Length: 73
Image: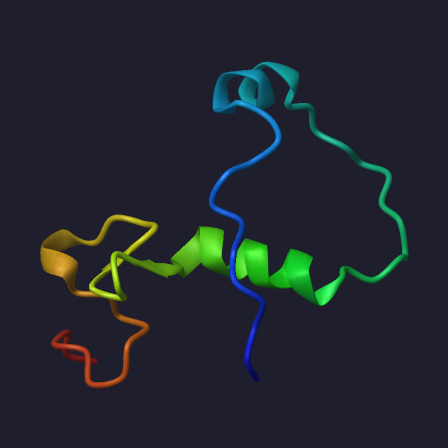
């Protein structure tokens, strides 16, 4: 399923987001929009730099979620 492109510039500076961060234990039953899900997926494992790198570190760029990963199972 094609996903919307991620937003690469947020409306809130990283420092402000960290300062305002709070844990919440009251959740809504409202579903997330497809754009919100796509943004979360990109932030967690998204490809950037023309797909050569990802948003998260991986030793030696061995991303185990990729098909044909060089890691043995």
